Length: 141
Image 1 (cartoon, rainbow, N blue to C red):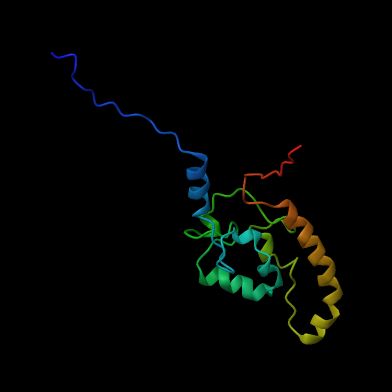
Image 2: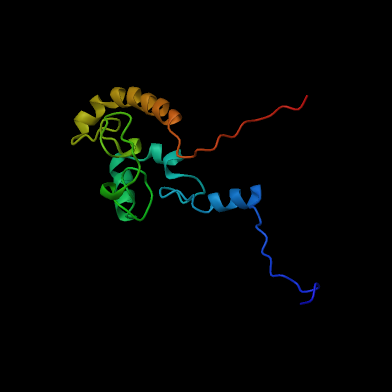
């Protein structure tokens, strides 16, 4: 046998930070506005009425708990529940946070309640994140 014989050696190439970042960004697309962020982080959805939010999630066949496509709440692997009422739905779809009034008279009386609950919702949503990564700003001295 010859010592100059080449071997078929496969080297493992570790993914770069850029590869990891771009592969994780591919899966982010908001179902409410189609921008490149998680649906739970969408600011436009907060201005939508609850019925419209529910209709969008239902029409796009997304999960009411994690807002992702491909499964329903029954099959969702997320071990979480609504921060407001404890039921199995995303906080953006909570009826307690976003009361649906049946008449316009009731709606005008509940405007003050909604204003209070919207600040509670903003506070609850600020603590909720679907992204496990934390980006910290650095200051060069």
